[in-house]
Image (cartoon, rainbow, N blue to C red; front, side, top):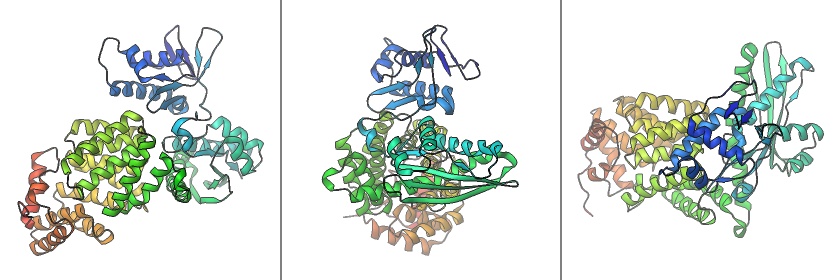
Length: 515
């Protein structure tokens, strides 16, 4: 890909011109003129919006435009440095002072980024022995690099480095890891058998040679490129939780005095996923500690926004209004720290809808998150809740069903189930709501939001005795819960609030609870 500075054009590998909005192109041109250097957000805004008050959101939209124009092959040449700015990687040509973009190689290290693990995808081995079919093994490894690179909490080493070193070292994983600076290596074998493609893959901890994960995948070769895409998605979905579990275990064993922001964030995750008051309290403390090390750590900001909001939602914070406001503020800080972080965008969308009554903002953020990384269950779920609270319940169901398919063994399956229950509730499919919430409270007896939906659905189904029994359990978990507290829920439409409050009132929830 070429950026022709004098002609003010961007051309792809086939020489075709790529269209960009004027401001987005001006931004790309400024980055190209400073190739290989970090350009601050302030410098980019001042140059592109002189004498105009422009927001970080305007800048983020231009950055998104540029990444879309660069495509999957070159989008990672534009790097984000949270809290600092952006850097474009490329080579300045001798003729015409133009910029040539090559596939991005090793991620730039420094600052907080050096704490995150580095993963290298090695060239997969073609076990068929047919040189004409070798492209399948390389194509799958290429797809994996692109798909894995969308996940923001670890770095994926560029194709040029990992493929070159992988071939030179002839299978010595320890030496490959050291040569690449990689903590984890992903390799595998591709075998073609008639019209079937079989792939085995494994994730190795480079320093110890320990196998973290391994699995087999196969499919029909009728549409080989669709098969490559599907295998890449399935391998990515399998790898991420295994890699995160390995990193959590490493952080747990690390001496307390040596913990950095990344380690503290990892330590918070098991407490966060436990979905108990004690777990959230411990997770909140660890996440706040992480942010004292790095106030612009997008993952920790988003997780803390979720943690604070969910504690208030469950009645585990006395200062509910303040907690809602803090959740929204933390989520927006996460987006400002990394405007291209799908998890930060999705969390901010969820908080904006659930706690901020900013439904248009929530929908905008949700669309951006889904466009960046639709194959992550958590992204689908957070965005699903945005659609629930804006009354787009059938669209919400599609998101939660997709999340369940993507991660059938997810430790937070209650998140998908509750979303489905909520969407069905507002569609007045009370039978389905009752079935789903009963599954949740069986797995997580203290999940008070599930109890609330269950009580309201039972009452609206004229199952008043069962509704009163569930209401008694709600008041055991949260003695001060009342209709006045329930009215603090944020929903985009009056009919939604009427249905919600009407169901809880019919179940017998009092207007106020005397203390």
